[in-house]
Amino acid sequence: MDVKPEPGILSENSEVLFSFGVIADIQYADLEDGYNFQGNRRRYYRHSLLHLRGAIEHWNTEDRPPRCVLQLGDIIDGYNAQYKVSEKSLELVMNTFQMLKVPVHHTWGNHEFYNFSRNYLTNSKLNTKFLEDRIVHDPKTVPSEDYYAYHFVPFPQFRFILLDAYDLSVLGVDQSSPKYQQCLKILREHNPNSELNSPQGLSEPQFVQFNGGFSQDQLNWLNEVLTFSDTNQEKVVIAIFPFTQRPPTVCAWPGITETPWQSFGLTSVWCVSSPVTLTMVATVRTPSVYTTSI
Image (cartoon, rainbow, N blue to C red; front, side, top):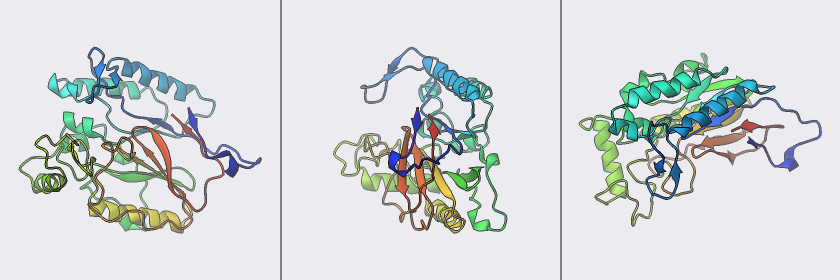
């Protein structure tokens, strides 16, 4: 599937600059088919690996291969932890990704934290921060090690930013840690339910345990990167899990920090999120051609 801008903004002289692949919610597990948490959507746990192989085959055989692939989180299902096969399942999926001929950038979703601690993920193959672009003369654009976020340039004048939507979360952190207590306090202030994964009766249903939020430090860093891109007239793509407003339970905790969208200038800012969407967040000038392979 190709996601393209509205036809009205394309000219006869437009040409494809580059493409990038997007895949999300692989949620592999060596299990028979089942249903999601709400019980209203079929899950094909084993078959997800076949779909991944099919996507990789497609990307590898394109006439103009994508510059990179964004893997937007939930790479294996939480059931793997229950059956104590998390590492085995992750290894199987990561070995499949080795067939891909272009770099893959991983973000982390709630199912990563059902299976592993943040410390484990930081030291695993799901940490692709080594692919980041370092702006040596602008140290404020270098992310902290306290959250998993970075930026890179797949094509001149296009900057991709991966964000950590579980920077503030009760998932994957030691329950005795100050950060866990801070995040639990935020969650309970907005969700009085005894079952913190339940949005029942909430005016802000996104405040559930399987979601998370952004620290002010990460948002400040994001603003520095956006400011740099504004100054240098770069287009920006933000990859994040989760961002979509539908359903309302599947989005990052809002209202915890000030908005990150403080500086736009001439930059076009797009969001790629899970479930897979391509959303224009803000723009003053759009790319002449923008294609996304999904």
